[in-house]
Image (cartoon, rainbow, N blue to C red; front, top):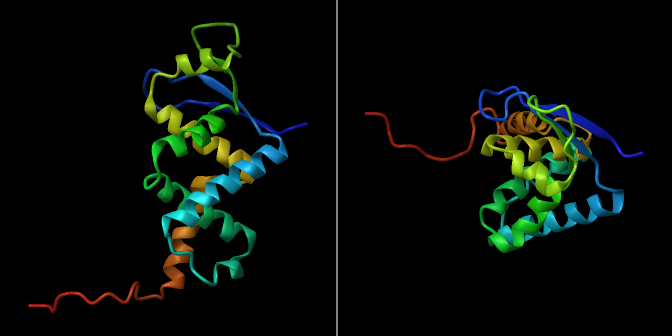
Length: 163
C-alpha cells in the first residue's frame, strides 16, 4: 500500500481548515518523475558541490531537489508544467470545513483551492512524502551544510575595502 498523508491548511486565508489527502505515486512513476526533474538540473548549469556524495543520499536528494527548484525558473513552462501537474495528481481528496463529503475528482479538488500558497504547500508536502522526510527541514540542513562546505568565512568573494 502506498503511503498517504493528511495536510490541513492552518494558515489564514480562504483555504484555512481544508484537509487534503496526498498519496505517493507508484515507485516507477516516482522514479521517472525524479529522473525528468534531474534532467532540468543537468540542463540548467547549476553547480553541484563535488563532495556532496560524502553526505550520503540525503545530501544528494536535498541538493538535487534544491537545484531542480532553481532549474524550474530557467526552464520553459511547457517543459515544467507536466511535472507540476503530476505532483498535484498526488492530491487525491479534499475535505472542506463547509462540507461533510470528501471531494475525490482531481479537477474538482483543484477547483476548490483558492490560495496560491496552498498549491505551493501541497507541492512541498507531496515531495516530502516521496522523499520520506520534510523538504523544508532538509533544505534548512542543506543551507547549513553548504555554509560548512564553503568554509567558516563564507565564499571567497572580495568586498570593497573598508573606509
